[in-house]
Image (cartoon, rainbow, N blue to C red):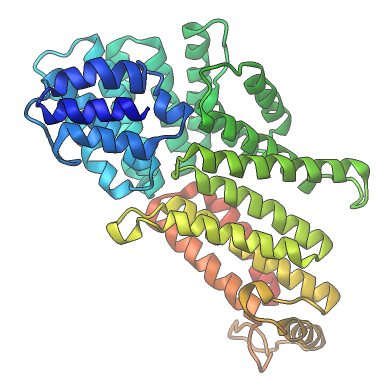
Length: 450
């Protein structure tokens, strides 16, 4: 790819921007609509540097030598590459500008409406990652309208999937299911040989099904995704397949009625670990930072379950490190206003669960440790707290949280703090998909209070 990138730089330096785009970038770097350099090779940074050549001021002011027919496409491509690199705040402006250009023409043809629908869908996904859920919902309404005006069946399917995903994050699962079903009908109409949603859209639909406990359907969806693998599958698509498989096995082992020592349970646990490890490695290789945290968060959940089941400190440390890695990525663009706030919500929820697992281990064994949190030796404190708690009764009528003179344990305090962080983020972002999880964790925390 380096000769292509060099050719684009030289061509733009010679003020031949249109030729550099149409004769080098489009056919040799992007390779039509396949996005070869990014989807197949993960070269987001290198491609963004190349796209910068088409701007006078990256990524705000386009070159005056670029024809109007190409401008909106260049802006959208730059925005999507910025998003993948975790530069979310910087990605908003070019994506909005691309959409404005698409819809500003006096007479829009089918192609213009298609591009407007695509750009609006991309913008909605960016806004979701930023935690601007209501705004993302509004943009998806427009994306569906643009797709319907284009009459293109594929874009009608894609925009309905994007809208369904936004509604899912907002907590409107009923309407989200309806739109996913409609999108799948359009998918079958668009590609009869591939009648179900696949790639990222298949993962989004499966994500909703999994949260509803419809594991058999998700397993069937995973089998379908494996069956339709082809040369066009991107690094990200393959990573999401592995993530889906890992989440399925993790759900099966956590919901299993089998005894803790059963072979079936052990098999699911091992498969969950292998798939989640592979998913994290593949997400990193895909270089799409706006997706990487979901792999770390899912693996942290599985490791937390392993710790809760076995008490092995290695699982506790692994879960904690996964959450640290996810948070580092999610906060990387925070100084610029680009924090990935939905991921930060998920991280806070998982940390709360991890704290509760530590409390439960301390209650059962009186030997829980907190080395992963720099609190070595606190286990005996937890054990003493639980013994005192069982031996005392709070007779106060003011609803205070118990009569332990030392107050709550460090882990209870941490769990409360992480719950509050998640609750505040849900309120700020409109991420009401997590309302049920917040309520369940609140119930568990209130149970500790007596």
